[in-house]
Image (cartoon, rainbow, N blue to C red; front, side, top):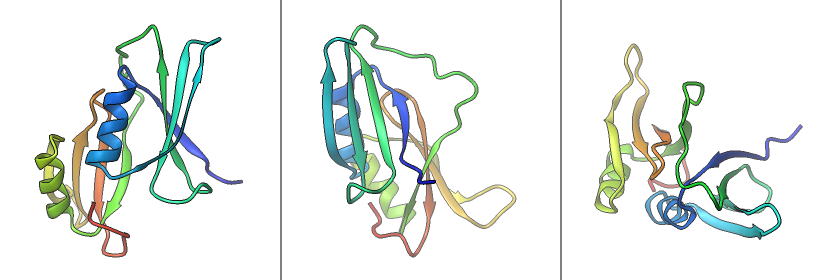
Length: 132
């Protein structure tokens, strides 16, 4: 079995693509409109075409979603969480939990929100490929 992607629905596709590419540094791999279904799919990732992706789904007639109580968060590993959060704030990103050790543990984490209020956890990992 191979993990392929996580899908989230977004109200403004261009704003979400801008956030994930310019603020988090992901790459837009492909984007396709489906006029018959009135939706667009965009797939973003950190590298090659065989990795797990984040799939953004934009239904053309819907500009806002209720997140619900079942969704938790996505997580990304970063080398230097403090520098990463500083850069995210400079780029207009919203930090909702400042970087620091997690409660009841030693792992250094932070939380940010995307334009649709989805939570994203940043976890400091010295082995991560970049701080941003």
